Length: 421
Image (cartoon, rainbow, N blue to C red; front, top):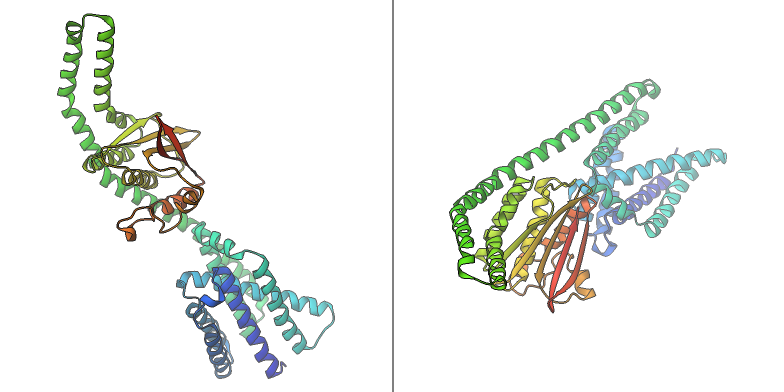
């Protein structure tokens, strides 16, 4: 039988371990926590009252809930993030204590008070060492930003573990008789999670594709109608080209006039290249951006080097990437300037390049441009500074790369973005 003082000391040590683990997992410094001492004190008092009033399974469940709510209040993060951190912390405590009990048993230490207090003290010491030397907040960030399947599996397996622990602690029946049923139930949960989450992902992607198709397909129709409307102009251009030999008698003047006129015609019909690429939604979106650029008194020049564009990134996400790059280039360019967009594809990856006139990039500017909230724009700063940060997260999510540099063309400095994903 545990001595009441030892029991209280173990309770307090485990609560401190929880706080240390939460702070490390969530990447929150102690000074940024909300009333940690008051929160732990209230949890200590309420937890002991609950355990005394309900010395059964209900009291144990109440204690778990109090622990979660306390950490939710102290850390000030979302309930789901708190829950995932709570699961990791709880599993660390449980598995570590089981290991320590085995070690004490091997050492033939039978005193329950020594085992309980020694385990809690070792738990605290190891937690401090791990949280100080191991960047577990990166692991937690990876877990939260990774596949949803992993998070839901961890959540359901934790629920199964809690059920098994509760049966072991408070059921008079032999727990071994429940193991086949618990294992079968766990297997069903795991398989169901994987199937449902994958199906949900497929449905979500299809919904995104449908929503973007409904949004940007009319723009593709506008592009087709615009080009059809210029067919008459094209016929006039052909007639004008036929008349050039009558106006220019020598070879040099005719060649110069033909090259100059052909360049103007080619420029006015360059957006017809968008009709030839295999991604109609992307084509319609880019055409809408070309019209936006005209309203901003800028010219968006599009070059398609490969008409068959391929990427692991879905089309609705590609639209976000292209939109951020174009918007950033247009906003950074002065009026009546050209902004250049180039699309290419190779090795199942799409390359998106933008080129716009801009300042020389310093090392500090390169570091800060992808930081959340950072902007070089002097007006309306509240609504700027998030595009490139979101671009970086989006591209990294699909294992892509971003290259940012300067190009000097005819003595003029240009900002060059190159995204490959």
